[in-house]
Picture: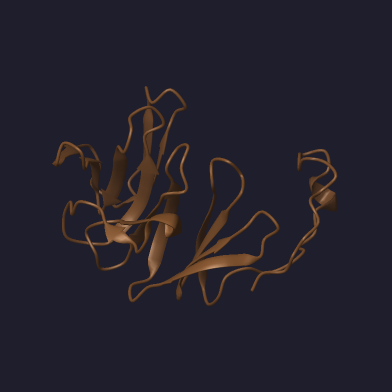
Amino acid sequence: PGTPVAPPAEPITAANAARVAPLARWGQGWLQAAAWSPDGTRLAVASSTGVTLYDAALREQDRLEMEAQPTCLAFAPGSLALAIGRTGYPSALIWNPANGPARPSMAVNDGPVNAVAWSPVEDRQLVIAVGPEVHFTNPSANGVTQLAGHTGDVTAIAFSPDARALAALAYNG
């Protein structure tokens, strides 16, 4: 379990960053990714053994054991639904412990999911990066749209707050 930590007295900024010190360790095994829920009540930590959700006091709350190593995490806007990329699978897992077991998103291609991001404006629009491909999945429309442009593996994706821009970072730039 995680170590309970008192909330900081002030936000971390460049002015006080030199005073920041590690307080505790969360997760098990090799740590790969972390994401805060949109409402700030949960911290998800992906490791070589699965994904652990911690409550606001950073105590372990839920755990998802996985046979495949998670690679990336993203919470859906306004929700505790968590998209989890994983090695060896062409789809992300969607997990919300309040709604039962994790379920796979739409499969997009062969290969591991390297990055996931939810659209901040369109309900249930998940973007998944597999190899050099970026895919928009829409479970309600049962469709997948692919964006072109990269020749190297995409390693990170992020929407602008108004969803008018999507940054996709790849090994080839």
